[in-house]
Amino acid sequence: MTLQFQTAPSPNFDARRGPPDMLVLHYTGMQTAEEAIARLCDAEARVSAHYVVDEDGTLYALVPEERRAWHAGKGVWQGETDCNAASIGIEIVNPGHEWGYRDFPDVQIDAVIALIADIRSRWTIPDDRIIGHSDLAPDRKEDPGERFPWKRLAGEGHGLWFEPAPERVAALGEPLRPGDAGLGATVLSAGLHKLGYGVEPRGEFDEPLRLAVTAFQRHWRPGRVDGVADGETRARLVGLLQLARLTAVDGMA
Image 1 (cartoon, rainbow, N blue to C red):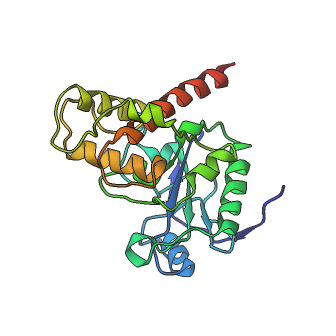
Image 2: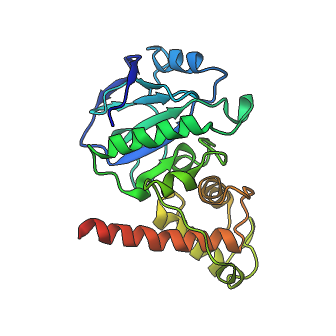
């Protein structure tokens, strides 16, 4: 399938240090697509992305994939602290939490899936490195948020998804909450760190851990986004870690 792009060249990019191996999905968080594209192409704004996907499925190309766009900002995923250098950024038109967050139209998600498949035909991007902006920067970002259909994306072969059996959820016992301390907080923070979050393993359910749990829920447990690590949240994390390990093994085969 050959994709058709509208061109909207942005001057906001610089050189990469190597080939991209990560995809970061955003929502535009502005009232219109035109407003978002204008900002991403404004030299004074010093922000950009490689692509914009409008609600009607129109694709806009802003920065060549071989260049480092300025979309991710400060953050970390799987130890990578210069996520702009490692990633391709896709802005998905949606007003976001500030301007009337809404579901993403099917035609828009169809275009996102086709774009991701096209990108992955050129670059080696593992499933556990297809993430949201909030995953790498949980302290300051919410996008693309809990309404983005990550499950559908994974069902099309892009990204990870796991739904635990009820008995697996029940086996994990009482929720872990902010302010808790001990082994449970250590295991939780270590698991999130292993998946990719920038939280450091420690025995306190502190504010950085609450933010990481919230970001995890926005991506992998969207039915409940409250920063409390209940049994389902933790069971999904365990399952995703197992999937990520299996995917890595398959990739080496």
